[in-house]
Length: 323
Image 1 (tube, rainbow, N blue to C red):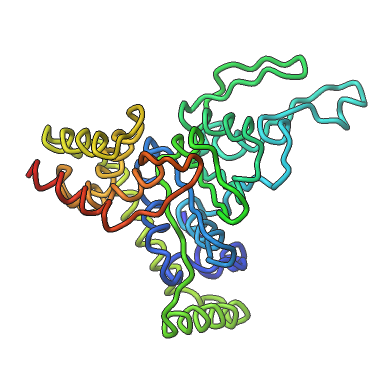
Image 2 (tube, helix red, strand yellow; image 1 turned 90 degrees about the horizontal axis):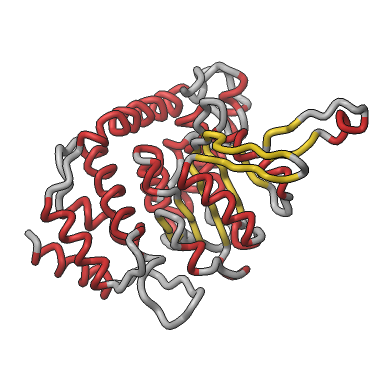
């Protein structure tokens, strides 16, 4: 829930989500992941300074009322899955400290676990986090502690700079969606970004309620997302939509079935956001770049290729064939 504009907590240095300029692809991925967590989280890739972190933090503030639980670079196993409180252990009173996974989604909480520069995190830690996100279950067996079937529910969001290395294809495939985030090129839009940030900074030092309209817009958007989340399970998936998704998977030579499942789940979320009762061709077309871009067959192992006009042409041809 979004706080009122005159709450101190609402005046943190986080731009309101409704004031984020551009970033439509990342916004769509975050909203889909919120409406339908089963899609499998989102990974944003782009160069530094492209507002990836800003957008994620603004979204978390809007829908969860707080900043995302953030996994710091260099985090250890015990920080992620939990470990003994060293100070208490030295006193002879061992006390288990939950890790960041439980902080984000344990004990009935549902939040965002945000991993900046996820490509620099050790693979085995990425695996642990992805397993917990996919299954909703955390299992801990370490330091003499065995904790089985700890329920966790969280939205996983990762960001990375491709110039600093990639993720192995096996790990990329575990993300429901991948979106490229680019710098804004148009001079007018770059100027809009600058003036928006400067105006936000000015209003932060202004009187209580100066940002009221921005927070009102965030609340309305949050309500729309919640309505879509409540009804997404009732959105029907016609046989022709399922067949089209299977055909796309074959056309793009996907391995396994995660791709077409993510495609249909994302299309359902898009349909719910649009107020539709069933998945249609336009919903599949919007979901395809997000859910298939990182799963297409490529001879360049580990290289994340961009979505192209040729890829769009394949999607259009398949959807027309199943219209």
